[in-house]
Structures are given as structure tokens and as C-alpha cells.
Length: 223
Image (cartoon, rainbow, N blue to C red; front, side, top):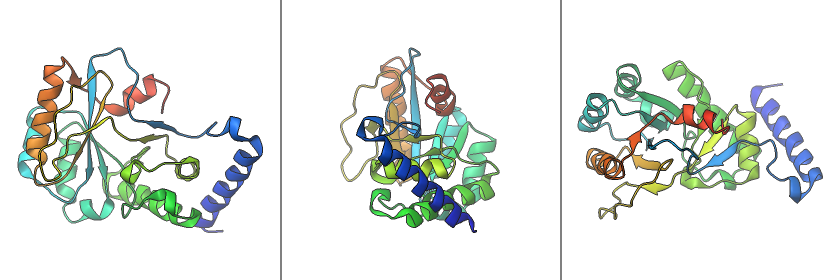
């Protein structure tokens, strides 16, 4: 039996078990969905999605300021300039995680489609960067229990959404006041350097420091 059939069979079995347990038990044993990390530390988490724009100024900021950052990369976006991201992981404080293969709304796909997107992206990220991604950012933040089941079957420990999106989509958005444990969303767009500086400034204004996401998820029992 091929990998896809094994994963789909596992998801089907888990779905039956979940249904049998009833709505009161829905979500038990599935990866957590986290939009903010519960912590008493004065930290904030910087995350950057996709990977299509490889801005050297954004890389310079991340490297010179030693910013701990989680990159949720699309394999295709990373593959035409893997060196850009490898430098961030090897010389900086970046980790690369799963953002699916082609950025679909996972809730609209069947089990085979979910497997292809999540497991497929995980395999390609591992091949490119030498480590298995354990976090998944579902595109558009679209999540349900079927997505969580599929993610679990693909080895995902936690699904990560966000607290605030600092990406400039057209006009510069208002800058929110950050709180401890907030997850900041950015994107690899032409405005990333400016968006990153704005997010780092908001963190400083709130007395917070960027921190690595995975260790804090583990400390909170969420990964």
C-alpha cells in the first residue's frame, strides 16, 4: 500500500472513531490550533508566510538583529532560491515549517487532497532543509477537525494561526498593541522589510522580545 493510501486509511479510521465518540469528545487527541501562546514571559512570536519575494533587506534585518522567526514556506516559493532561506536557518535564528504545497483552503479538500498538500509539503521541506516540519500553518487560517486529523496523520504536532497580521495589503494596516504570547503574521512580499520593522517596533513598545515559537509551544503543552 502506498504512502497516500496509508495516510488516507489512517484519517478514515480516526474520523470514524471521532464520530463514534460524539460531539462532546470532538477534537480529543488532535493537534492543537494555536493563535496565541499562553506564557508569562514577555515574548512575542514572529512568523513569515509563503516565500515568493526574497528581499535582501528583510534578510539583513533578521540576520543582523538575530530575530527568532518561524518561516511557513510553500515548497515552490522556496525552491527557486533555497539559498536565501538556508542562510536564514544556518546563519540566523529561523526555522522552516509547513504551509502546504499550493496554499489551498484545506477544509474544501477530500482526504487524498489534504494528504497531498500537507504530507507532500512536509516531505519537500524536509528534502530541502534537512528537518521534518512539525508545525502547520493552514492557509487562510481555515481549520476544522478533518484538517486536524489529516495534519496529525502527516506528523504535524500543532496548527499555528496568528493573533495579528502586520502585512501591508495595499494600505499600511493599523499597528495593534501587542501582548505577551501574541503570534505576528508577516508575508514574504516586497513590503516585508518595512512590515518587519513595524512589528519589531510594536514589540519594543510593549516591552516584548521576539522568541522562538516551538520551545514555547512545548512548554505550554501545545506541541
